[in-house]
Image (cartoon, rainbow, N blue to C red; front, side, top):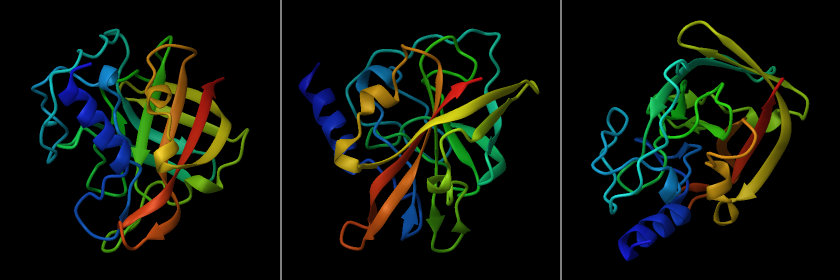
Length: 213
């Protein structure tokens, strides 16, 4: 790995959560690992500039038959939430939608319905002006709860929650969260724990992993 790429990755790991526009804000942004980012230069999600890091390997191609995710249901805590594709921000972290009522899908990773890898969806907890975020109650999810993803072509994919974890930001296993290998799974990420008024971030991330049923 080039020195500049390593610096970009370590910076992303330290910052983890993206405070989008307003303060304070709770987001589920997570540093995208170097091998899961697109080749630079990148056209990031709307309103998010391209990452200022060294060129990284191009993302694995997605089967053309798989449509992108459009809506998400998570048990009793999130119903019919719009899903939009996102990339990486200027710090190399996964971008998060500015609208806290939507959830971002990391478009350089696996798509829902892929035969392997982690499909990563990240959303806000709250925002000072916009109020509650789409994942405000994600921490209330229980193992066994149903999760459903609707694709842009109308296909619906069913999942079931396997794990609900609260992880300190410095302890996140980023490579595992964004893995393109292994069994297909859905990874939902948002903020959790106490809000640190010094760093203006939440101290933890809530990470929910769900498997296809």
